Amino acid sequence: MTDAAEPTGVDRETGDSTPAEPASPNVTRRGFLQGTLAAGSGLAACAAALSPLRELDTTDFTIEKFLQKHYKEMTPEDMEQVLVRIRKEVAQRYDIEPNLEDVKPKNGVEFVYALHLGRCIGCRRCVHACVEENNQSRSPEVQYIRVIEMPRGSTDLERGDHHYDRPTVPDNDHYYMPVQCHQCANPPCVKVCPVEATWKDEDGIVVIDYDWCIGCRYCEAACPYWARRFNFTEPGYAKDDTGQYVLNEDMAYLSNRPRSNGVMEKCHFCLHRTRKGQMPACLEVCPVGARKFGNILDPESEVSQILKTKHVFVLKQELGTLPRFFYYFDEDYPRLREQDAQADAVPDDVTEEGVA
Image 1 (tube, rainbow, N blue to C red):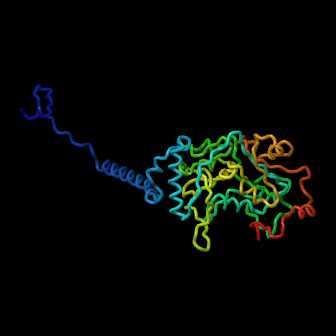
Image 2 (cartoon, rainbow, N blue to C red):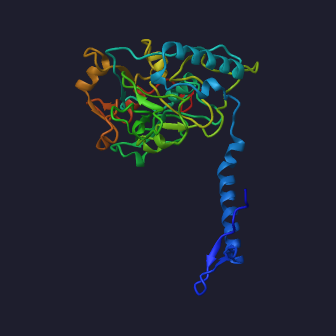
Image 3 (tube, helix red, strand yellow):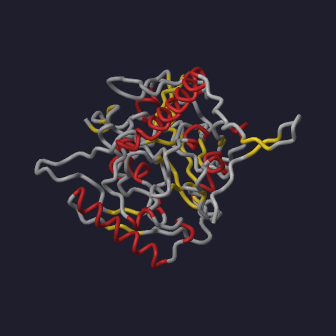
């Protein structure tokens, strides 16, 4: 076997074949420096993009959690395995034994909320009851309900004050409008979620699967009622005198189980209670009966009667979100500033923070 012949060329005058000259790379000093700079810039950009992974919290990372199916695809056996895993995680982190369930919606039920603005006194008891019931972070404190102090005669939220601070409430020149998730029938938050981590259930409650949420916050931006909350840090919970975490141990997968850093959460009508026939915690604690809740598909329910007989309205109706959270006044609104305000007020121990 002979060696491979060198490449040849042909002399145009003699016709003789001549060895071809080796090709020289067409690289200049400037081109070399430009290529090196471009490669260096690409590596730097790649390093910057991957740098957040160094701070990624993998404490709760498990293969089971990584391979978990979407909620709607899980069988009862799959869900039970997930609940077992979460119970162990909660027990290890908070030293409690949670009563964790996956509570399903009931057939023939569609929940709605009605709030009597003529009765609400702005005491914020509902806010604090919601925090305790739904295991919301205390440090920093997350609150699903905002109570807005509104000037009488206006429903323009831009004129309201969420941060009002008065020694006693109510103030005669204002009324109070609690705002929380409106559980819309046409929810814009659901439409923008890129991974279907939030959806509207059969009973009208819009839920979030915290294990499926990627924390993009698109839903927060889409909500016109500012009803969704993002966990920027690991939630912090209160402890009692013995150092034991203070948590509500009655939990559900789609409601009040402890959340983690980097996920969204919001009001879910206390579905771990309401799907079992109980009332939301915010309703039970209201001292003046301003909150009403029930099944709109039951024509005899209190909320059905309110929607039939009262002057009801929803916030931002022009957006077409079709809220399931209604507000209403009585015929005699506004009440007399002096006598009626005093008559409707709760005992002296009620302040903005609840019970004195």
